Image (cartoon, rainbow, N blue to C red; front, side):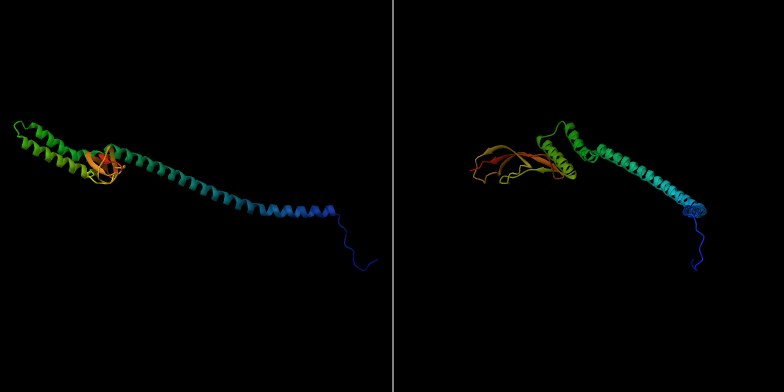
Length: 187
């Protein structure tokens, strides 16, 4: 026999049962703490979700309001875009009507009135950025601003303007109507 005291032998299934009971006991003791912690985290996440949902709805409403305001401004701009132009043409119309009321005017008076009215019209067009395109003879032909009506032989360099048949007009660097010109033929 041996000198060491013998320890009571435990059945292995009994040992695992006791450790499971201990684990279960420690788990049930910690369970209220974990549950409270998880519930607190859940409440915080729900509050954050509600806050984010509110922010999203507000941002969406702001975007919709901005879009609506922009559409209204565009609509008004289109509707009243010609208002300034029309206002600048009213004095021209008044001058033409006044000229037509004169019954006993001389040819010279009518001519002076027509020239004054033309100056008013040109000034009104220029105020609204409508500029005449009137190339002089010898100007290089520009297909973006000129339309060649005919090609004639000339002593000038090829593809240059010989004569102007009708002025063209542009508005803010965009051609409304090209100038009608006669162009030199290639040699």
